[in-house]
Length: 193
Image 1 (cartoon, rainbow, N blue to C red):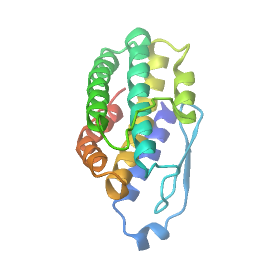
Image 2 (cartoon, rainbow, N blue to C red; image 1 turned 180 degrees about the vertical axis):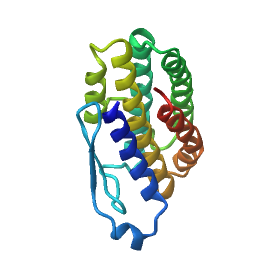
Image 3 (tube, one colour; image 1 turned 30 degrees about the vertical axis):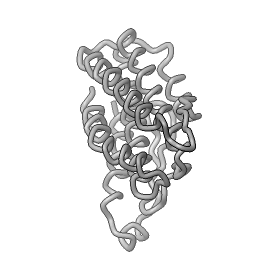
Image 4 (cartoon, rainbow, N blue to C red; image 1 turned 90 degrees about the horizontal axis):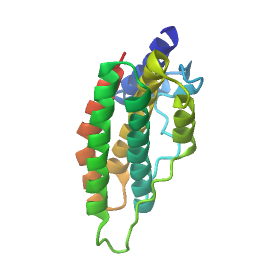
């Protein structure tokens, strides 16, 4: 439980840093938190998130991989979770991210040059999936809740970055349109116990 609180504090530091001016952010130091998945979460105020895609194909692939992670991890939650709240959240994530995938495919259909979403999970997503495997019951619920907060925060950061500086107007619009949904998912994930 203490570790879950530490992970949530790390997410709060990341979120709170978003609203600061450059001068305020420069005065802050790095905060490193170890979450219950054994992964270090670094929150650097004012620093750009690492490896956020700014090109159309990179963004499409990252968005597709995010949806795939949410769907696959949530299917695991339906099977291995204990809490009714976790299972209900998982069903909502499967539905929501299946719809997001369809919307992404619809957005890129017919673009020139053509874009094809590749949903290969990145190293962080693969590590999160690995930590969920083999867990059941309350242990799974805790790990899943933490993974959902981490994944949704990274997706929200990616969407905001692309919306602010992406190279494809249709995908910029897609990113802007997805921000409220992902922010709502993040808030729900933070409420999981």
